[in-house]
Image: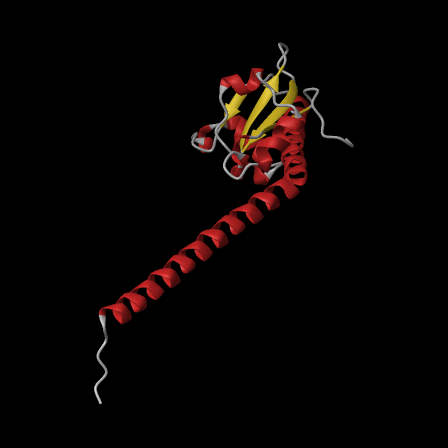
Length: 173
């Protein structure tokens, strides 16, 4: 005996398929939202530690610049520096200051940094960021709370700019 589908049977089958597809779509959207929430929560959970790590990098840049300046002073060479921004896009191989600091801190290749000097040419502080630094970053220093807020963001964590020896310290330092 041959089974004939009626229009009602075809409509019921099509309706069931639509409901199943719609249910899968809802489940997929829920999974994506849950994953984004978890990644965002993870960024928030680790923001303090990542901001302190950025601060430690700024400290290392400062100490390397100060050590290089001391080396030049001991060798009776010109040791007065000027405030300078060195981004990853710059030609670092041609920058003598960068080459001198690199000997003391080789991880400097992975970051954008600025050396802040006083009027006498003595290293006063350092800035570090994952994004390219601009002259306005030298003037508008971010507080540790601002850095931590940026580090919490999934989309703005690279905008954090940390400084060392310029009056801004993380809690506990």
